[in-house]
Each structure stands twice: as C-alpha cells, then as structure tokens.
Image (tube, rainbow, N blue to C red; front, side, top):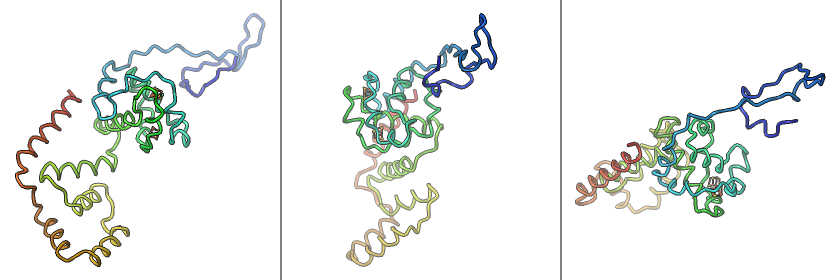
Length: 238
Ligand code: SF4
Ligand code: SF4
C-alpha cells in the first residue's frame, strides 16, 4: 500500500527491499516499504514555558491545532514549508530539533497578522513566530536580523540618554549591518532637508549629533530601565 505524505518521514526511516517474495507473493519495491518506529526522548519539557516568556509567545499553550493560521498565512501561500501551526505544535511538545530544521524560514514571517485575526483561540501566532525568531537569535542559532540590530541600537541610545539622534541611529545601524552610508535615498533625503529645513533646526541636529545630549534628569530613570530589561532577560534564561 502506498505511503501518503512520504515527504514528512525522514528518508532513513523508510525501509524498502528491492526484491522480496512472501508466501509466493512478490512484494518487491514499494509494496514492502516499512517505516521504522521512532521513540522520541529528545524533547525539552520546559521549551513551551521558555517561548511564553518572550513577547508574543504568551498564549502558545492555547493552540488546539485547527490549522486556520497556516491556511490564512501569507508566507504559506508562497512556500508550503512555512507552517505556523506545525511550529506551534513542536513548541508545545518541546521538539526543538524538529523545529530547528526550519530555522532558515521561521524568521520570514512578514507580520501581516492574518493568522492573529483568524485564530479562534487568541494564540497570536505572529507573536509566536517572533518569539521563536528571538529565541533562535539569542541562542546563537541564527544571526541577528537587521530588525534586531536596529532595535538594539535604538534601545542603547534610549537607555543611555533618554532620547535618540536619528542620524546616529541610522549611521550605527548601517555600520553594524555592513551597509553603505551613502545610500541614494538617504543622500536625497539629506539634500531635501538642507533645502527645506530652517537653519536653526539643522544647526541643532548637527550639534546634537556631536554633543549627544541627555534628557534632563535621565540618569536614574535610565538605570531603572536597564535593570528592568536585565531582569527580564534573566527571567527568560534563568
Ligand atoms: S489558528 Fe490558532 S488555534 Fe488554530 S492552529 Fe493556528 S494557533 Fe492554533
Ligand atoms: S503574521 Fe506571519 S505567520 Fe501570521 S499570517 Fe502573516 S506571515 Fe503568516
């Protein structure tokens, strides 16, 4: 009997004898294909709780596997291997190794939130995708995404000074992500700013970019915020 969904079974677990006769009946080839049993013992029973600690992953335990998220998913329409329902299932079972087989596509979620709106259990699959992507970055399984690099630069300036300098955020972001500083759109934007913005505004921006001013009385507030963020990280990683 043909095995449907063969693609879901690891090739090494499919056993087929090219020539086999049983009780005079020729069952050579796919007629005798067997699947070797698999006993799972490589699960992490705490993994679901780990993902729940990341922003967006809080409701992953609510999933009842209806599949509506995957059916409505923008990325699934492009690539049938992009399967939020399956990844949520693996997260709940703690099957990290299975999950990591798709580490190169999980981050491709485009945050359209179609899954979020259709989910009958308020799981917020988009949030779970982000939580998984952040977990993989923090574990060093995948490289930091440009969005994460940008967020970190933004946060560092806020924590230190209580404000950001747009030009400095952009400059550092480009440098950290190996991008040219002289991007066409940026050059064009600067030209327009020079043409249209009042001189005093340009002067203040230039001065701030050099002097790095802080928000008044920011010191203590910044320290409290940094401490809070550190506590949140420790809560996730133990
Ligand atoms: S739509 Fe919600 S409940 Fe259904 S499989 Fe997706 S996450 Fe689970
Ligand atoms: S938010 Fe991500 S997971 Fe949800 S439907 Fe859009 S691409 Fe798919």
